[in-house]
Length: 535
Image (cartoon, rainbow, N blue to C red; front, side, top):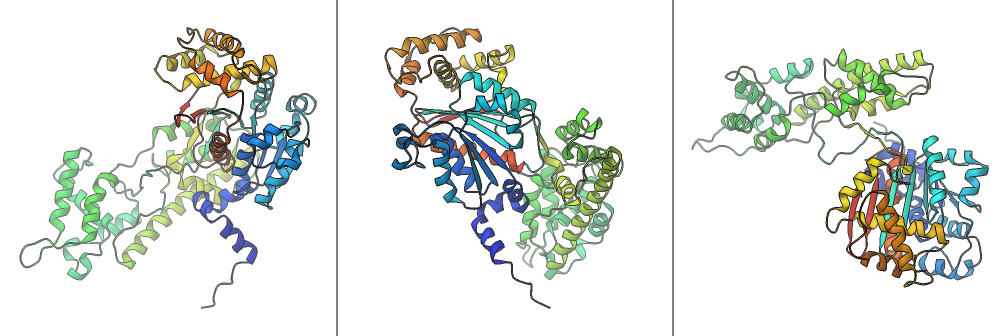
């Protein structure tokens, strides 16, 4: 047999560079990342740490929007600036040094304030996969958030002040096919085996197998035989309770052969079957969350503008109602097990072939829909990926940041409920928002000039925000004093931690893999506590 041709040096070097992340999101995930374009507003310490976390993995392009010049404070808190950068544009200088981390990434610097761009050239933001902003005023936040919501561009608003950090993800409906669940449920269909699998399972008689081959029977076969034997005296029901599953385990124990002294022979495949009782005896069903997706209005009322996700959901519904008989396509993935090579390959091919057949049916339905709607085609590879992960599809339904400026009644009630708890992280959200209001009204951070004198002013901002959500003032001013002592500074350790977190969230959004935070994350570097909230 001819040897395979070696990979090109460029491809080999790329795989070597991105080896670890390719194991997380695969070649297609890396391709999605490399086609992404992320906009960062303000290259402060937090902004550059975010950039570092997205440039190193190889995002396609970054654009920095920053009209500030480098100050001594920037040089003190930002590792990506030099003394020679002082007085120069902060975005351009940061970009110059950051791009040295990964020459494959393209970079652009725009030396205009974001509110000016928003007013004069709002289409500027349409080309980005994600827009991330820090250190912008309330007026800009509200205008930018509304515009990005309207054009359906994901937006991450982040803050880093002293020991506190936060980010808020604003995203319209965000569909995720590859959620990478920690405990993925195996899909064996032992309760409703498809015909080729049924024929294979029935063809094996455990009692008639030679002793030398007894330890190589796949545990799937052993488990299936035990269930069938259990069902003969249980009206063909499926074992569900703990007691019933214990009875199945006892039947498996009976299958184990014994030596001449009557001692059970230790065979790993039977031990695997016993262990699998608790995980594999899950009846095949259509999950409620998937049912909600495929019967939602997005999937039932398709238009030419419908996304590929909803078109595939519609095709999946057609499969479930017809060929699938109420079930999703077979995943086609077989877990590792102790078995002979022949048995394992046979089983593996059975599941793979069935998964391929199911995906082919869904693909044909997708093609019919695409033809009817006269929209862009969807590749067979994308449909196969969709079917492979159909059991774990997820939709994030985001909310507009403007619901917090001022808080709507539902947001206010949500915040008030959490503020009732002692030592809750929500108090830091209030402080960060109040500091934001202070900066917008006074063009400086609280405590930047007069730490003691700003306490009363910041307290007024806090009281106003608490009044908007019908909450009484803080019983103590400790948090307010602390915020004024920060003086608006960015601690690099906090910015570095937050930058890594926000960079990861941006990558999740661009690759459409893994579930992003929904929707607010708050971090206290002094206590190392963190919390997430969904407004």
